[in-house]
Image (cartoon, rainbow, N blue to C red; front, top):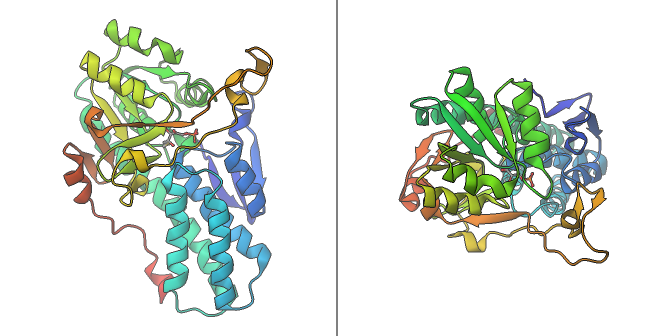
Length: 355
Ligand code: MRU
């Protein structure tokens, strides 16, 4: 199995995804600033993995600051969490994980800052294990959608490189492939940062799953030629009404799928649902450096000197285009306002540490 993110040798170790597929480089992060930089530059990326990186980043920040009282510990923790949550705004998993840890500090009766620091590290480790479990359960539920061998179209990267476990949408594909239910995977290259071409193709190749890379603008033609049985993608944030924010280009796939009568499924853990936003229009959409558009992979200039460009990193797919959302608790179907409300959010708690 690919291990994308782990706590080892007193530091956070990640696969540096900016080096893939050319090189498999492990990067060691030893302070909160390094975690912030790695998130911003997409060395670590994908909604669930951002949550895990943020959790360990909070620990690293507190470890270096060495607060001397419980009150000071809480103040420092809130300030580091707010710094980290600004690294990338769209994936709610980052804020979710940071809030989980802040809540566990507040609930804890401990007053010794050393003990609180240990608590934060233990909570971060639990979140990592928790994500592994969530991914596994998503893949188990997702398999119910594969009544026979299918060709699946996917976008961006939702595999081991985007989580602490086997992935969400891609995790389902791995599980389906093991059971002989994948004919092939069509992989959108995912401009501008090429997560499909660089990362998803790398993971599918690693698992020896038949994959065909297409450029994003080929999806309509592939659907028209009946080459796609299902679209399966991940999510960065899901609003209370089922609107889904995910990598730019997801919305076009959903509209195309609707037009061609192809099911469009989203896979995401409960940490990706945000009940504080009633619908997608309230989800903050990250806008990245315009030079990511005027260059190919930050290298080759492809436009005129000084060309203006626009670079929203995500879009929002309205719930009406979503056939179902695969979670660790089962598959949700429309109407999503109702099915999302019925989820059980009593997840992850380290009772022992709270005593
Ligand atoms: O900008 P990225 O690469 O972090 O975007 C990632 C995505 O859009 C994924 O589809 C999403 O985070 C789900 S990952 C399981």
